[in-house]
Image 1 (cartoon, helix red, strand yellow):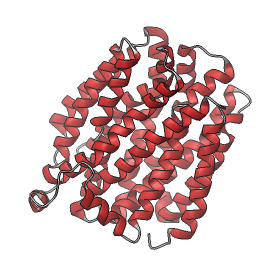
Image 2 (spheres, rainbow, N blue to C red; image 1 turned 180 degrees about the vertical axis):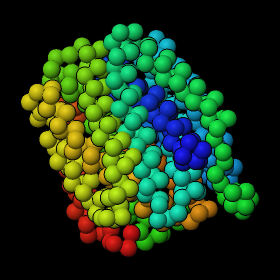
Image 3 (spheres, rainbow, N blue to C red; image 1 turned 30 degrees about the horizontal axis):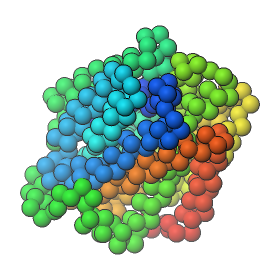
Image 4 (tube, rainbow, N blue to C red; image 1 turned 90 degrees about the horizontal axis):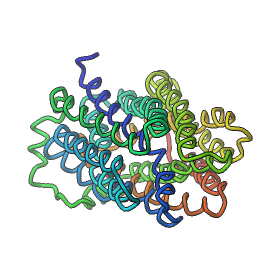
Length: 395
């Protein structure tokens, strides 16, 4: 297993996501620490994903033409620079710039998904995508508590410095250990016949003409909007409900997300392999939407800090069922020569949703801290009923 390309891509994504997990729960409370207004917080929460929306299809398109390996290496290099900038930021403006730069180079997940599509059969695609989910789970098991502990004991800049160091080491390891997955024949067949336009209009037009793919992309984008609406408000919710300092809020949020990451890693790293053959991807998608609708709707009403360890089970468990199933369904609907472009398109649309989600969530949080979670719950409930009617078993 240690010599398998799947293992190498898993460890590459895992190390990167540990660094990402250290940073993401702290973004909004760091912005508030630097005196950001409600609008500035909303923009800070949105800028990473807005930049990712603009550039993810471009990087995915490039990975189809020149291979997955160089795009992953470029992405890791950009992430390294952005983390160090985040850690050394002396003001809100530098904090904002670090998140914008990070979003522009955030091509690692779509390239990793395309990498897995290159080396797995359609029948094993969901299992392979589950490894990405497991990396997310472990990354969010280790990252948030490490970030919270580092900021609490070593200062606000420590999480960014540590994340940058990890990402830099990951870049070196990937350079020596990560082989190319896309065959030379496929790359040569694509070179010269595809536009490098960041929005990839050819891919988008073909995707939305597909009888099933456009439905799956829409569900993925709207679910991502719901999830990201609450993603950066959890720390603010806990801080407001339990009157915590910036350092305490970061630590307590990190511990809750650590538990969420453990659940996600167990489900996506192991259980999903047994659940997909037994129930199929469509049923797991519907079950995930139902769990998320309940989890998001109940989240703002937790009576004690300890209750959030129970509520996060619905959020993390539902997402762990939904994400690899949906990614596999999207991948299986695309041709072998379009995997990078389609996965880049899906990540680009999801990034647009992640830009709109935090912007909406952080704005309405200023009105009532329950609103982001209720919006997310209602969105997932609507997607559940819509998916039951529109996404059939042939998907």
